[in-house]
Image 1: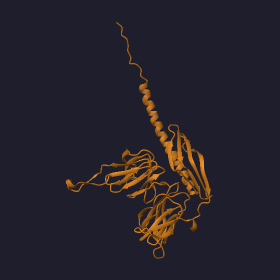
Image 2 (image 1 turned 30 degrees about the vertical axis):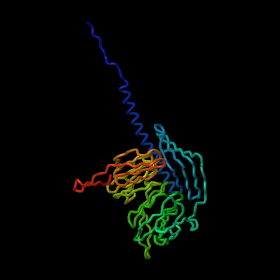
Image 3 (image 1 turned 90 degrees about the horizontal axis):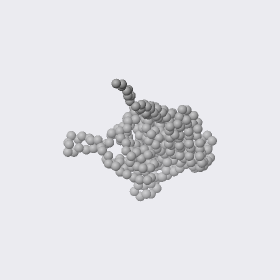
Image 4 (image 1 turned 180 degrees about the horizontal axis):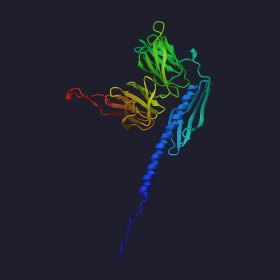
Length: 369
């Protein structure tokens, strides 16, 4: 009697599929590394250009091109050259880099929308006006000249023991006396683009001033000067790792958190040194939950993200899709309800809150997320 050998049928796909998956996973990791490298190269170039007097900006920025290219789309790009007093605006800009050489970036501008010259020189006659009105009657109280164009709002503050109104504009920071409108102090920091976010006051003698488009964030100290009520400003540090455009930043427990060109960044509050940069949230907005030590981020894509304020790393706690469409608005937290909106819709969500023990189970209360 003869025996016939029977071997198991060959299944090469069992080996091929894991191999393809590993290659795809490795290539994806390489692409994301190259994408971050290209973004860092562009950010460094913009910072160098800003130091040389040329500010480059985008209304929104998006990345794509996977798997073989890195593509950056910039909506409403702008170039402001304060050396030549020229401002250029366009509808779109596309930048492309090959994934194997992310430091070589080729950009193309489509459809110029305008070129202007002769920026405002900051002369007295060209400055904007601050207006104060009586809250009870609506009658005018005072007017004061303060900088020129800005999206930033007048801000009441107490600095160096004095009640002032701050205005953060193209020429720098202007402070006027709150009761009378008389000039108090000026901090000069010329910028030919637009400024949006509010000064962040750390104390009566220390503040953070943020500017996008490559200029960065600066910590400024107020120190006494000769003369009653006089102060002078001293720069403590300037960081190009934190360049907020119209996205507010928040300070908590010795660290500054904010969006630097759509990526969440953490900067040391004492030195301005970058601690970490991670997480793409678009042109979102940040709300600080100080009692919980957490950040509430509403992303440009309409996601609500809860993040632990950790100076060592990005630490996401929870994430949920809450809105459809482009979202640039601030979230608002009232009790256990979060209110969110964009140009398309508004929504309110109830959120679970961490318990705060009172010692009496019948009177258990809640505090922060």
